[in-house]
Length: 85
Image (tube, rainbow, N blue to C red; front, side):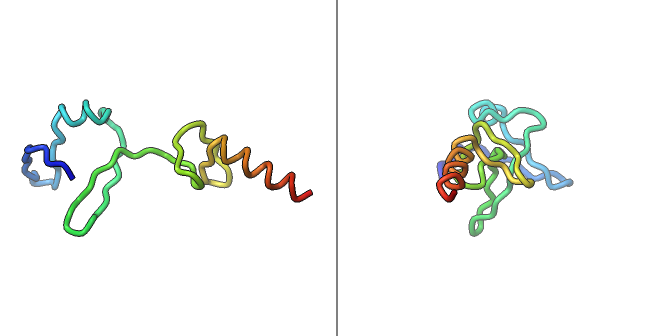
């Protein structure tokens, strides 16, 4: 992990402010969802993006039975089912 040199204090409600420079660099805007991970003793924030359940792609997603699948994986699945016929 690369240090930014920025230190922020946690307020009485447990909040921290992410500096505008970091938000701009990472494309985080107001109301964007962030995922929170724990990695050992580290807290990791990641911009939340929905991804394909098979390949992890975040482009051209379609919802199928409450899961997101990208168009490339849909084509692969379709070719699998038609090859079984």
